[in-house]
Image (cartoon, rainbow, N blue to C red; front, side, top):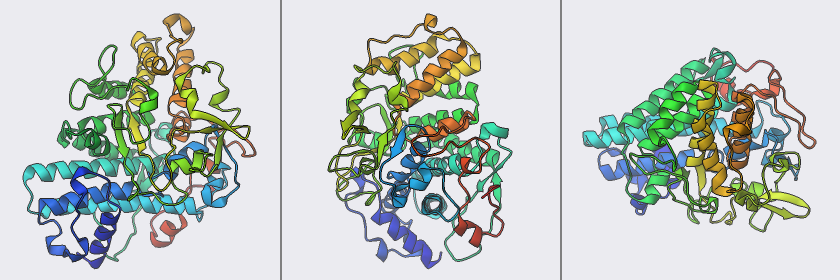
Length: 479
């Protein structure tokens, strides 16, 4: 392999994720190409390094969540600062915009890191069991990265059954300075690869990583299944969401996973943030004072108005906080803190120098994914779907109980599930993907204009750097 391999691996070490097995990483700068995968200990460090590549500040360290949320109707930009995603919020991005280029670069670096490790473990001197496990972890992270990209840079799968141009599908390591020319695969092909990776991960990941911290911060079988429910929901494959969801959600309340990690709702919403490793925290990226996403990247910076935050985005008075069905006594209202006459989201409160974990998958999302999919696949006011909805609402608001009589039409039930998603998952990166998978328009908020599903700004452009170095890649129309 080329020297780029060693450089990339060294960076992966520096940004490796927090884990009990990563307290004493070896000196990667002293490892040669020939023995990088020679021992289980070295490979373990390389695997942890890929988790680190996914959680960098420009990706899952905070910015990706903010991009996905401020495109939607829930937040108002308060600083007019171009550095902190103003152009994303007001639908003014171009192919040269930093956000467009930096996210693409971070995600493809993570994908390439995954590919390097997948290739390396096959040639290394590991046991068959370790090779399979590490490959499964890498394929889970690769699937998460491709899914994250396709939700912004390409048309929703549901728009035309995935026929539109998707992304360059890079599945082999790039370790030298050779050509990067690669045409965009279709959206359908990208989703096929994502599901292939997740199916492999489900089959080959461990049922449990034993310790709560590892069950939260490293992939296990239920992690892959949980992400599949999200991916399949984005594809409109609702019956398949039900099939996958039923693997980790019991038939009746109290809902929980019966095999593998005993994932379930935490008794209180107040316990699932900070550095939470509850059974609800299916997958999170861990941070600490020695491992931060960097200045102006963390979620506390964007949404918190205390001395720990940057007061960048307040909650829109016309957003979900205006919903009268979201009662003042609902425990989730306590996250909406009033300062200076505005409401701010305080799900993340630790200082940037020692930040909270970033929750990527929570069990409440899985319950809502399954609830919606049951209704859409059956086209009925389904009793179990209502029970799943009540489980999420009732955890924070015991005074509201939905029944079949609460809904006069199937659409009314779907509307309530959508409201619950906006409340429960506020600030966790779901606003834009939910709007786009349903073919809806982005509403105006504050001084930011609306973006119709037919508008150029509905999709992000392919970054300028990709077009300069990849002559086979074509731009999204209108950019």
